[in-house]
Image (cartoon, rainbow, N blue to C red):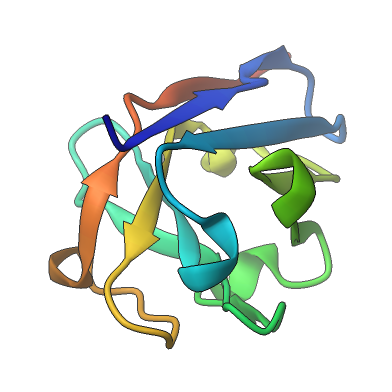
Length: 124
């Protein structure tokens, strides 16, 4: 079945780094945009970043620009989110999701398959 599985979350001190992975199965990764979303306690899920089918990168949240880098390896069926300079406000459950169509979007309604999420906690 079509599936996305996140990994790489954990507890990190402020200023630290994590690399999240999203491994997909039962579909051709190269044919879909893939987005990372996050949801903090009591807040709505927000789009963080997206990689398009052409390998383009979009960052939806101004506060992550320059700190987070999204990338994809179609041969490994995996999308990555490298997170550097982590801050306590980055604490959230991070989800990857498959986009509908060929363009990136931060709208949850334009994503049809979601992973189960991975917890990222930034705390001293």
